[in-house]
Image 1 (cartoon, rainbow, N blue to C red):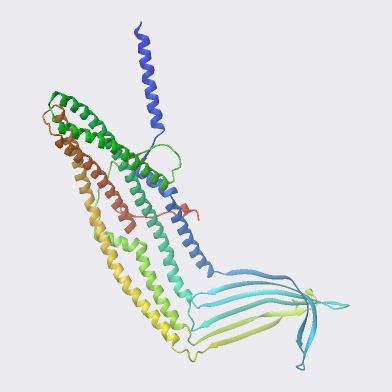
Image 2: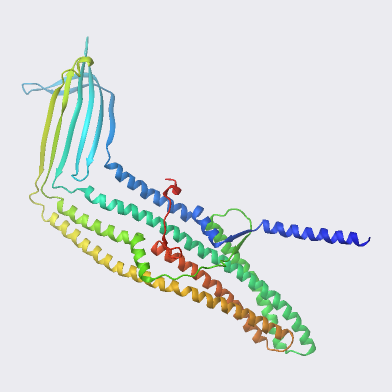
Length: 498
């Protein structure tokens, strides 16, 4: 019966420890690489800026489209009061001053439509105007109506911006969509860097604590052996030195961990104080990409390929614009409609009279001292510069894609070698440490070398792991294609909340 209180006490102690461990786990946030990337894509500053840049391009394209849709507007003057003395020309040609005192009201409805392929403007207007003249003893009212007016203005031999904009603006919008995808992949790439920087800082701290524990044990054992005369004093001093270095390494690792953790939290905008433990990627689906296919995908999907086309079009446009400026040009304007005036509003729409206006304006430059020719030559020279630059950039673009694919295809083997080296180094250290503890080897240098090689091998493994994922996201960014699932990258425009 006396054993029951002891049993209950142990049972209570067990659940207390278990509860504390569970509470520690609950208060610690475990984050994988995929989770970190998703958080960064949702709320990092770079993600927010990428969305704003795309919104700007989206509305710029919508503005371009709206410019060539019918425009409807109303203009009104309610009222215009004029009480002044102004100069007036009499029918006989003499000048005099006339006292004016009136109120003018007007309202106009206009519908206009740009005719993009022709470069002209078509318009339909309707308006009504009223003038109230005030004299010393009487007030008169006059109305002027324009029930219906149709007009068209057509530039002749002038630069038509629409013909070029309808080619360039869709390219710029598509380029903005691809640029947004590239920015998202850059966020993944940046997050991967911060993730592994923090992960390696955590690993360095773990190694530092492990080494501190090991050297503490070894140093205490060595002091006993030294007192028994089994090891030399220099070995004891070397172990003491290693123990002191291990203490310093723990402090340095703590500082590096705090710095890496701050950068990681800052980029992902994690504002709480819950401790973070990173979970390294454990499963990797190795695959290879073909350089030729990668070049095709990059040419088809990347924003840079559209940038090449856009710059060439803009250079050609500038040459065309230079050739049409300061040259012979004309503008034809034609208006047809109806109008009527009356002193009562009831009569202002009765029996409207037709009205027509036709005008042809000419611009004929005679002498410009070579300004037009100079502008054309400058534009043509700039076009050649753009062509040469684009040709070289296309060559570099394809070469960079090829090198990136080759580099990526090397990563799986590099990662396997690093993992195997880490396993071998750890096993070597454990064997060397065990032999030292049982006294089969007395040289502390062998143990130091084994420990250094173990630490380096573990860090090399995580560096190789980081290189694999960074090369993976770099390849995605350059081609906007996921070779792992054999699909181009895309996004839902509704997720940006335009």
